[in-house]
Amino acid sequence: MSLPPVEPETRPLSLEHRPLLHPLLKGAGTTLSEYSFANLYLFRKRHGYRLATGGAVPLILGITYDGLRYAMPAADLRTLTESAREGIFREAEAIFPVPEEWLSAFDPGRYAWTSEEGDADYIYPTERICTYSGRKMHGKKNLRNQFVSQYRHQGFPLTPDRVADAFRLVEAWQSESGLPPEATDYAACLEALEMAEDLQLCGGIYYVGDAPAGFLLGEELGREMFVIHFAKALKQFKGVYQFLFSSFACLLPGNYLWLNFEQDLGQEGLRASKQSYVPEFLQKKFRVTRRGGTPA
Image (tube, rainbow, N blue to C red):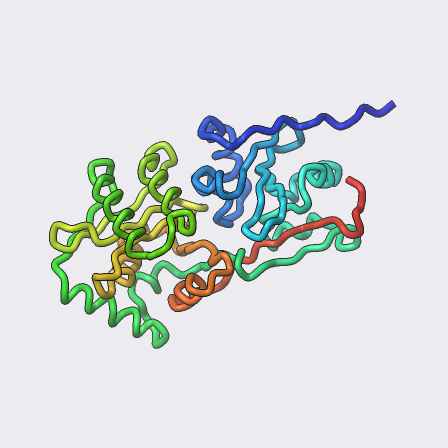
């Protein structure tokens, strides 16, 4: 007689789960921006993230921006048995995000997959953002140079003694946006600054005179990629974003050949901004579902 499957224990994602998930997410071997504990933790409320344990591999359960209930395994799907992959569908409508190279784990006769443009991460060569080389980047280089020539500026690592300046900048940025806080990543950004050491985030902060003008905050995502989770600056300083990205890219250690600017969430303004920096490619994220209600 076969035993019924063990019902997994699910709990809201919390900081206490970092020792379990951080090494598993890194070991999964993908550079999708969701495979970062910091990313998951900081946006846990927006996506309703829960951790399910007790199965073959821990699962992060959540809801996409467009309402899809999904499960994200903390492992390379190709390393799981067919039974384990099927079992994931007991917890969600889809497996997401799945990098393209993992799709080989799924039989196309039993499973279907799609990718949404708003889900894809924007990937740039670090050297190109540092120098703004090439004809298509000429406008970015001009704006950066205008900032450098017009403003007395200086930059520093975003260490704990400078976090208070970053907090003030976020407040000013939020006010400048003209949007309600719940429509931006305001709350997640403040929490990221407050918990940067716990989440192993690092970045830089830049000043015009004595006033904070912009900062970046991110982390390593694979040996050759650095992901930028937050980039905030005040538009009153013309060229500040172009300077911010270029300066930070030039200071990164040489092993980080790529910058990940994350997804655009289908927002036209965000999409236009990210596309204007001329990505080398968009890193697709697939949503895998069962065909015709195939039983798990």
